[in-house]
Amino acid sequence: MNQEFLLELLKTTSPSGQEMAIQKKWRDYVKQFADEVRTDYAGNVIAILNPDAKFKVLLAGHADEIALMVNRIDENGYLFFDKVGGVNIKAAVGMRVTVLGKSQSITGVIGVNAQHHGGIKDAFGVEELFIDCGFRSQKEALEYVNIGDYVVYKRDPEILMDRFLSGRGLDNRTGAFIVAEVLKRLKEAGCQVGVYSVSTVNEETNMGGAYFAASGIEPTMAIACDVTFATDYPTVNKNKYGDVKLEHGPVLAKGAPINIKINQLLEETAEKLQMNLQYELTPRMTGTDADRMRLTGKGVPVALVSLPLRYMHSPVETASFKDIEDEIKLLTEMIHQLDGTENLNPLDD
Image (tube, rainbow, N blue to C red; front, side):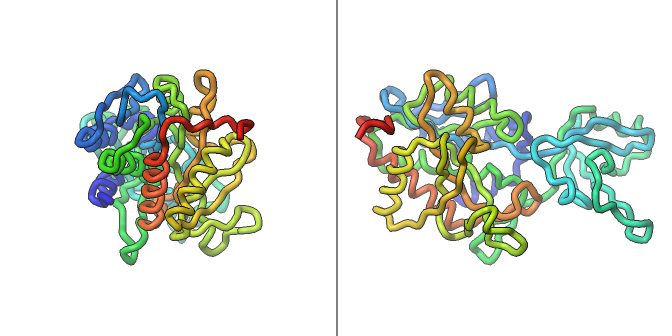
């Protein structure tokens, strides 16, 4: 596993709708081993093995992260903002941030009312928070910041006890990393089918990247590589949210959107590798790129393989290196075994 590349992705800003910086780095990385690399009008980067193969496997990992967006600057130079994606505003209080300004990045802090002055209310809205960059006035702020500029948490990744990875935006730059590493290993191991690893955009806001990718590729099957909720820490109701643990293996989705035969291929591969799998339920929708890929063209059989993640949509999302490696191995071996004659129709024996 190229841990250095993973950490580089996590250090790169990639707010949903402005993923260009991270996509250029991902493109430069996969160019080293892909047979072909291309982009599309959504901003996806598509790395391909065996582009002439009729049986095509699409692997999608989205590179965008949740963020904030400046919507007002008051007369004193304080920045007010809206959410880009499912931001947990309680986790934002008191955080350092990076404002992606007109020509440079600006450091700021999300202000919080001192406890001596009553502290912050138990219930509050995003409109009650603000960013202090040290500007003296609106005029000064406008020299550096535009309405609509993105803001991300100022948070570098941390390694915990040499086994866990923590930081902002593991959802889902880990997925973009995984699909790149699977392609790299398949280049070395060989495969008989076409493989299209895609670093997709916009998943956190509209999933438009996944639609563009699947519509353009017209895959035989597609697998979304995302994250899911780990429930192995205090305060989580496992009876309600299931039992998913770090270091216990990749998580397969089960439910109406998921193609049963793809799951069977994954399960057979895990058994061969003597690898543990976990499960989550997606009875109606998955809430991931899989939903948009499934409904492109004539319809695409999909599966969802997820990385267990603690503290989702916070600045301290935490995952396991072991689970990342297991997911790479699982997908690499499953695709390596495909010969292009597989029938994914659930009614055919």
